[in-house]
Length: 231
Image (tube, rainbow, N blue to C red; front, side, top):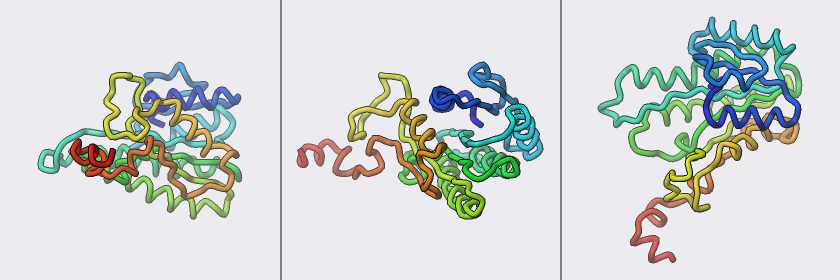
């Protein structure tokens, strides 16, 4: 779900390299040629989400791993965040994750895994992202709830929390201790780890993939005067 982002397509490549068959759900057909099966649906609508999951489960013969990656991020300060901006962000992230997981639950057996794509913005704040940050924080709460609820069935639920991820080499790496931002394939490998038996004893976890960004003190690291004193 959220099938045409850089992270989604990198994740498809990662899973396919181990022989998996991949299904995707998107608002349109963008990127659909990367998948073995694809459904066009708006997963903020429970009926569309349920129909897409049912169709894809039938087509592929079951579901072993779910990756919840839908999101909508509009940057605006509080006073300029409209009602629709707020509801769109919450719905894209939380409603879609809930509806897809609920629809997929009957198709999951012991050993299945669910991986949600959260964000460092669930943990640290950035300017002008009140709706997005709240939605991602809520997603991590949902991950913990689902992990405990589904654990008796042997189903694991985890999340990854990426920082800035892009293939654009000109993107500023200011503030990242590793001196660069992340690549989509690096997040894809984390998703693959959580979505397979390689992480068989991990559930209710959030794996941060942010190059150390969320561990940084903004005062000590970002302010040139303070950074100079430390170095």
